[in-house]
Length: 214
Image (cartoon, rainbow, N blue to C red; front, side):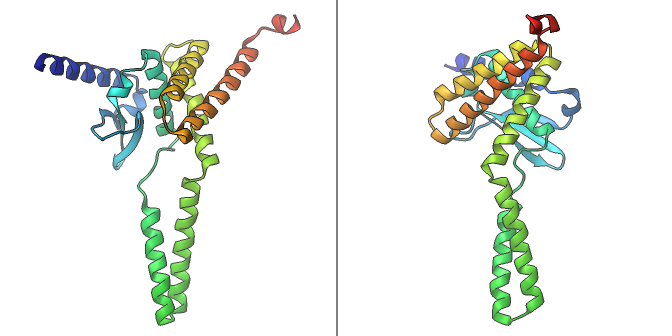
């Protein structure tokens, strides 16, 4: 039993080191890769852990069920989100909204017009930011952009363009098959559909003029 646990721990450390090597050089000094210890965590996510420091957290149990190429492309998708600065930030908006609402109620009581306007302005700004963060269309656009950038990263690391598309498509299909959440599954399906359209465009673009004429 001890031998199995040791072997498993070594395999996990080896995988984390391998993934660290898949980071573009410009990210290696401030992005870390760790296995998560949470209960029922997402497969992979990124989190700010300090000023100019980001940690990619992976559920290594679920991760182990994926093929190597699938892991690589899902990892590069997360890297792309970091590069595009679309990972979730510290949620100051909820705190600001609570402060603004509390201030507005308080100023209504004491009837200070200027402070009431400031409190309402704080509510407005934080409310708008919360709407933007939770806007489904915006979130999906960010995911699709990250998929495109993941394909580009894969070619940077030696993948052919067709193989990069194939690997990410295969990974998304696997996630669709294993995800119980209907909402999350629909997101993966939307990403897969967009990826297929993008692959077809890339394939058509790569055809020679002679092929087009034929």
